Image 1 (cartoon, rainbow, N blue to C red):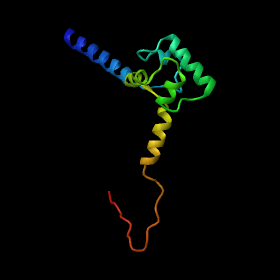
Image 2 (image 1 turned 90 degrees about the vertical axis):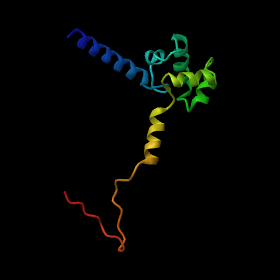
Image 3 (image 1 turned 180 degrees about the horizontal axis):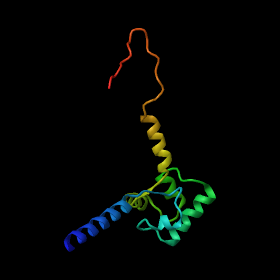
Image 4 (image 1 turned 120 degrees about the vertical axis):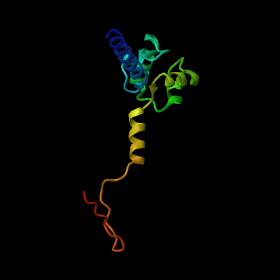
Length: 120
């Protein structure tokens, strides 16, 4: 009984730690606490990111972030992206979804094609 309870607790802890490690933090929407959750971003760096974002708008990409925030070179940004930092994830995801999505709008069939009927 004790082993089963212990293994359940360990499994739960691993699930939570993996889930939090894989959670993406978008630099364009994150608050101070979320940014500080990324390894390598402390209070000063989080403040610099938020101040720059507020003063000049959202970051376009990794190069934009590294050029606008002091101390955020290309390698640093790459390392932070590996830790879960994303730059404009929502807009990139929406653009990718739009480019790869199949239209739900019915297409008018030409006289040469017959509609397919699926019976259940």
